Length: 255
Length: 194
Image 1 (cartoon, rainbow over the protein chains, first blue to last red):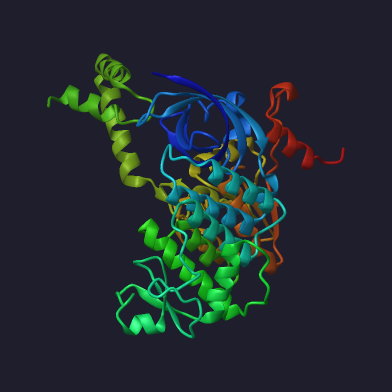
Image 2: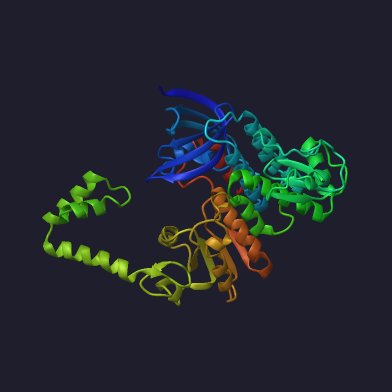
């Protein structure tokens, strides 16, 4: 049964369809991710104008034809085009990466109200310029937490201690294991990697959401970025395209 | 499959052509003179065999370098960068640009994994070794088009070459009342003194 929906949304993806239509993937505030078709969006600018640009926050009226079918976009009103993001290459790359993270962890029609808020806030933040590496890491950790994949960083998955000199991150179990548990065979699978105390401290503080209380060395920031990248790639099952773009763009320090 | 059905099924693969249109086209070819049919077939074969991208600018042409690249009346110090050959033709039709072109083709798209290596940006940089004084970036005003323009500017800035961007805003004959907010906003921020 077709359902008429009026909601707030962020444009995540757009693809051409046939001669004049466009497929637009939206992250809505209350219906999750919806794939919609915008009829004649490429031929006529009157109906949708610049509303269907990537990252735009829009108010949409659409007809939902049910799971497995494209919803039909009837009307869109631009609320925020994030013009400032579009004037900064690094901000575009960051916005793309954050968007891809959402696309990796939420499937069509999954409940995604908090993801909508998280991405909306991040895009508003990007209007002021590219994010710092810590802001990107915090976003990654927030996405993992909202999607139910928060890495367990507080205590050893084996014995529960939070005080050890050496740690490894066990990708199969999604958390840290202390050295003494490791020698007893806990977390000794092929997919584990050492984590230095400083990286662990940085990630713990970022995960708690407050201000980081120390100035992390570049190596620490780099190792935290690499570890989170591998965690995310493990869940995504593939390298993230926008992350590779970021790497090509600016090399070190781009997030 | 007989010859008529085969032609209909081939024509159906063209953009905007469905079964009915393809059938109508075939009947039109059959009702025209035999010479027309042969000329059409030969013309399609010639396009397929002879037309290639120009090694210099990426334009589609029977010669490489193409007619535009070898035209002595064109200004080789100004290069207009476009996403696709159709955009080059659109600009050519205005007669406003007397310089050369560079067809990328495509735009940077972080979300689709299209980076600088997937489009001909490095070939553009090679062309800048000659006496280029200005690059006009005529990519679309989408996020991807803007990203491409910004990336080109970033690469070229240090070479002392002027990088300009085509204007965007209210179309000729357009009415403000029916123009979307984003376009009006851009038109205002990109206003120029009279």
